[in-house]
Image (tube, rainbow, N blue to C red; front, side, top):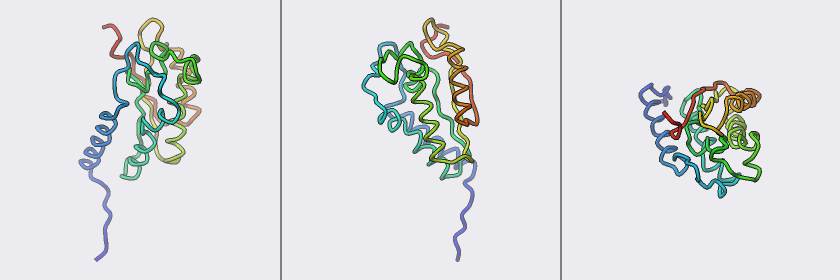
Length: 166
């Protein structure tokens, strides 16, 4: 009797997606970045390994998903690198917008390299922090252009963070 490999059902895919999301949300990278959060201890190796985006993209592809979205919005740790409100670093990961966007751009590069061009990669990005001195709309447009140059398939534009006034 032969083995029949079936396409995962929608319910199974939804369950697997919840497990993947819970894995990322329960990791040490899923917390709200507040002013004064010390980002100085995170370096290139931890920025990409801690986020686990590449491994999650490979896992999602292996179990039958067509694409993955990288969440870089709303004040979570990874988005804290893009905004000058929380990223006060003076090394290669702080200062200029290009330096602050490096973790996102590199995660996209590595996810694409690991999954190939047929697997969709999306990014959720703030349009603005809606706070004085925060990520501006012009900054977001520039990051969107860089993402386009990397071949991102979907850009979900959101706005604000949990610190934004109502």
